[in-house]
Every structure is written in structure tokens, then in C-alpha cells.
Image (cartoon, rainbow over all chains, first blue to last red; front, side):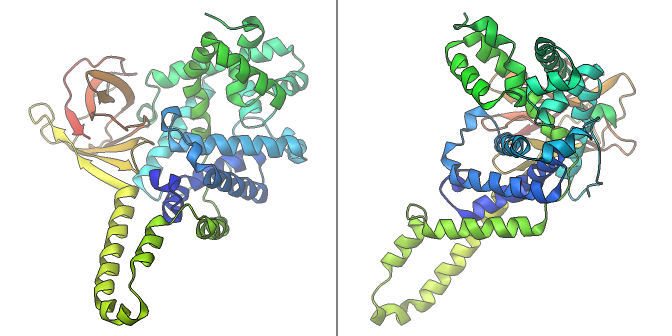
Length: 181
Length: 234
């Protein structure tokens, strides 16, 4: 990452190779459209390149930083335009649209990790899981979610907190990929 | 200790992490957080769950044209950025005048080859490194393992083992990250029927001393119950 911060394009390319797929996958999961996902991913990586000196290792891994930027960009795109209207109808649950190839052990292990987080989400009560998914993957604000689900704003906020708290505990207590093999 | 308007903002911690606040609400929450240790702590406590969410997404490959388009811009901006390629400029500045250049051509070729080798090595090292594990032969005599670390280890690593005994349904293998005299729990895993086992250690390994593996009750524990059967010194 130091080489990226020094402005080295080859180091940046390596960083893209490492995290570009996850970034594109997250964008696609959120907007449900490959062209828009491509735009979001490109915008996010250009923003990363141009603001590379802002990365602070103490605040998390490179991957978390990259995915956070992609998430924010996707939310901006969703709230800006028409994507939300299309997505509003297809937010029931986590839809698996593609079979990814297992090209390396690392990718295989990441798929295991994905299953672990999936399971932690699935373990949540339906209303908490749905609230979290609408917020994180759907890009809806808490007020929009309250309107959509016809419930008080305080209830929505409470479900988000409870859901994240339960997920945190499940992930911390070894609800892990190995368990699911 | 809480900041002003704590009661109003405290309910927003999860919404903040999930990106569910509007721009104005988010700015207000960030301002509040600067003055409110309790909200800061709550955000940091819940952050691992929010950060895990994108890892649940099914991975699909990005189109090749995306990388091409991106790198075109990056390469172009890197060439225009006067602050960047100081090393290249210094080498060029060190070249002698035109009259002496042919005499140095052979030497520069060697230099170029050496530089190319150095870059290739750097890329390989940057991309991935593998470290073999030390094994307690008395307890897992057939086992071997290695830890594969991508980049600088800030994205964690993958531990792959072979020759692991089946522990039955009640016990699992658990990874740990050792820093100084502190041990942090990492995920558990089980051995497949052929004795292989793989686990992702998602924690940032920068500054860690070792990755360990023990045998623990199903579900894992917060404190190791035995000395490690595998140890990878970082």
C-alpha cells in the first residue's frame, strides 16, 4: 500500500487485481445492473487512486477501505437516480445470480467466509435481516425503510442495532466457514 | 461519558454504519461522535458486523475492459503527476551527455536487467508469500501446514493444512493470532475426510507475531484450552 500511496501505477494495478472483483461484486449486488456496477467500480477506484494518501492502516484493512468507498458510491448512485425503483421490487433476500469460479485457494476461502457471513445474516430474525439488507445492500435510508415497511422510525433503528449486535456476536463466537463445510 | 444530544444520536449508530443516514444526518452524527465517546465506542463495537456484510456477496469477475479503462487513466495521471516518479527522473538526470552514452549502453543494459529482476521480485513478494508451520509431532504426527499471506497481510491470510486427524463432531480446529503476550481468536475449521483443512484468518496481520492452531470445543472458544499444535511465525 505504501507503493500505491507513492503513486506507483503497478502497485495500484496489483491492488485492483486483489480487490477489484470484490468491489465489482458488491456494486452489482447493490444496483443489480452490470453497466452501472462497472461505472461505480471505476469511479470508486479512481477516487481511491486520487485520494490514496488518505488511507490510514489504523482504521482497517485495504479491502475494508476499498469496499467502503464502493458502498458509498453505490448508495450515491442509488439515491441519485432510477436504479432504486428497479431494485425496490427485488430486495427479498440475498439472491445468488452467478456461480463464481474457484480460481485459487484464497478465492475458495473467501467463498467459505461469504457463506459464514450469509449464515450469520440468515440466523437473524426476518425483520432484522430485512432491515439490514434494505439499508446496506438496497441503499435505502432509515426513513425510507420505515415508510416502505410501514413501521415507526425508532423500530427500524432498533432492528438495525439489534441485528448488527447479533451478527457481531455470531461472527465473533466462531460461527465460521469451517463449521459449515 | 456522553456528548450533547446523546439520547437523540445514540439510536443512529447502526444506521450510520449501514449507510442508512441521509447526508445531513450523517454529518450531524459524525460531529456528535467527535464529542461522544460512548457513541464512538458503540460504532467501533458494531463495525466488524457491518464490515463483514460485503463479504457475504457472491463473487463475480469484473469485466476486463474495466481494468483497461481504469489503468489508462491511472497511467496517464501518474505520468502527469510531477510528485511521483522521482526515481525515474533521478536516473535520467544522472545520464551523461550524448557523447558518452554509447559507452555506457552495455552497463545500462545490465542495470536495466537488474532493475527488471528487482521489480519482478517485488511484485511477487507484494502479491503473496507463504510460510510453513511448525508442527507438534507428538500430537499431530502426520500434519503439515502453510500460511499464505496476500500483500502486506492487512487483508489477513489463508492457512492450509494436511494430515489433520478428524476430531469428531464435538471438537474443531481453531486459529489464533498472537501479538506479544495476547492471543486473539480467529475462525474455527474442521478437517475434511482426506485430512485437509483450510481457514481464512480475516484479521489484519500487520505487527502480529504468529498464527496458531489449537483443538477446541465445537463453536470455538475465546481463550485457547491447549498449547498450539501448529504455529506459523510471521
